[in-house]
Image (cartoon, rainbow, N blue to C red):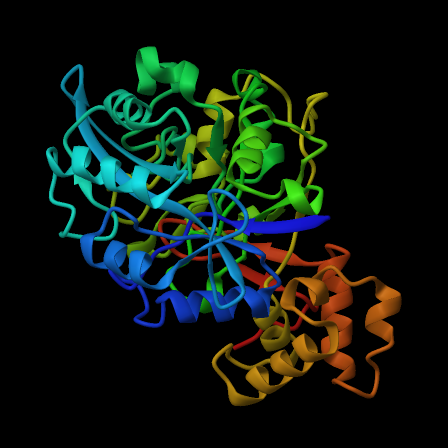
Length: 408
């Protein structure tokens, strides 16, 4: 049986996050999107953790909790800031915990090293290796995963404060790193170019700060109904089990905010080769460019583009439904008509992901129920017949579904 999981998101207690990211908002969005398992988000934050304890019901599935018909798994994101050879490193990591009781113990240990109340994503002045040691010291069923691994400032491989290998970052604890989150600006095919990651499971999550963004990236598991539980998900990730961890759902990486190099203040966006020719300097103001994800992949890769490892887990890139509808109608995503058509399509197919994964034949059956233009847009998006102006320096990339017809 197919289960979709989005394990990295944030609660209303994280900075720059919608107040609608409470348990009700997350659960309703998960059902709308077609997701069966959600990360709890921010279990390290005292107020949010109190809500989790009060509102989550223990599930029949061991290690999961339930709210409004949606399964939840305890997750959080933390920031490690530390120095290595007098260079400051800033790394974001995901935490998974098998129970509320274990999460309490993890929080007690982390509270000795930082202020958990300051933000849903707390900051610690300890090495990433120490984080792994602490959480595993509480329970061997806890897991640490490098978050959005390639982003310039807070990714383990980021250009500005990252490392060139997992071993450099996690030191003697690197043997306990089983997975890596690719992030919105990279996809598995980019990560396959690093042979050092062949044994690492590549996971994908939304890192959502609002209900609308839930499941823009996600993981697809295939378990017998009775097998679906925390231990099974953790085992599938740790063992890179392609029979049970069957695929990931991806953003087109060009849409991510850091795919290309650039300088937002000057409106400069460059391919890696162009940035290298300019010595990574903005041609307008002469300040340092933000080196993007594709550039870093090129720096660290030991394989040519297009290489596919034997044990790779497949993926599919999708354009979010609301974006497809908006582009098809030439209107902003917040437009009322866009919302109406979005709801209509979800009603017809049962969920957003069901719409996005529908065959051309299924989409053709909707003629007369939604606009011809939207059907054409959905077909083009599902077949990858799109163009993307790549994102850079914190600016999202822009998708074009219809050649020569740019939206305002």
